[in-house]
Length: 146
Image (cartoon, rainbow, N blue to C red; front, side):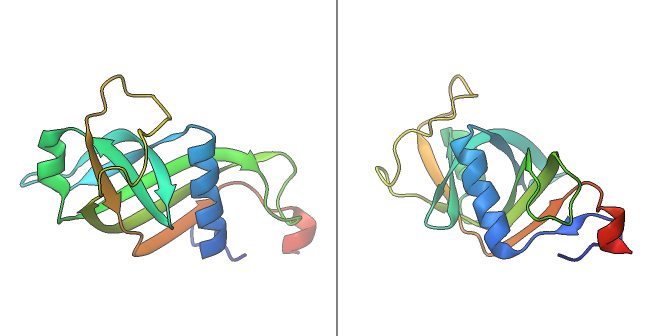
């Protein structure tokens, strides 16, 4: 694993996909970055993973604003370190997915079960995972860096 200029460990693509699935299984929510005419808007949403892409459940108004546009979706969490070079214990991670928001076929997934939102809406949006990047935050063991 290599470190970026800020000292964060850059995750491999398989690690990113594993953490997205873990976040979904743990009931985490993510944040959807939506382009607007003014500044971008970032909204918390529950999600699930479907064939490597992400699916979110939204209301009609948000559905009309995002389908066919490029969006970003970020999920953060804390889990056990992946690899002996990291300090013991749990470390924070962050995975970012970028790609077009597409209409997901009704019935392609059930209701998204995380349930943080009381009324998430009835429309499904699939975020195609064209670009997936991730970072593991924390400190490397001194022996591994030396």
